[in-house]
Length: 254
Image (tube, rainbow, N blue to C red; front, side):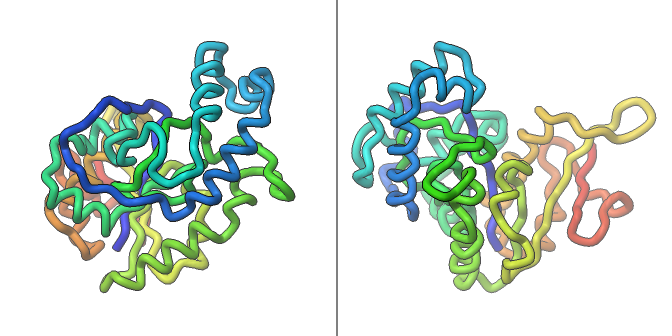
């Protein structure tokens, strides 16, 4: 069983003392190709493509100009500790033990526009490149076309080491669209998280993202390898709602 997460726009590249262990990204050559393509953009083109303000444009222009295609070179940090958005607030990897990170390394994949698919301890450099942007690379019209079947094929390869063939999709739609579930040798399970408000349950984006991170941590801390055991998730007051769930579309409510 593998758990999927999205990356985050917010990054934290301050030095960390959580772990000294690391791995290298599986698609470093592809990442270098994309970084080289972004470097050719003018600041105006980058701002339009990424829909960012002048300050963020300058920051990300500088990041890509400094980005190195050599694995492990430059300002690097393990992906699970570098990403810093709401999902990673829920995950709270900075408080994990070495054994937790080792389990995550074998059972979690973080999707990325630049790196394709990352293991938690893969070293990354600061970047911003969302999967959904329409960046033309060679004959590819956008990043979905650039990555093609590579991410799906990688998940199938990683799943061969797992007894239970399932994907717990905690990634956003933007990132999960880079995968073809029909080509996976696994069940495709997509949990939803809803809050009771007024007369019914509703989905709130900020709570949804944090819940995804909390569920990933629940899997890690409890060493869950069987998808059915994920239904026991109860962090933050959530519980599996059998009445609202249908098939592999699981719903957790609070």
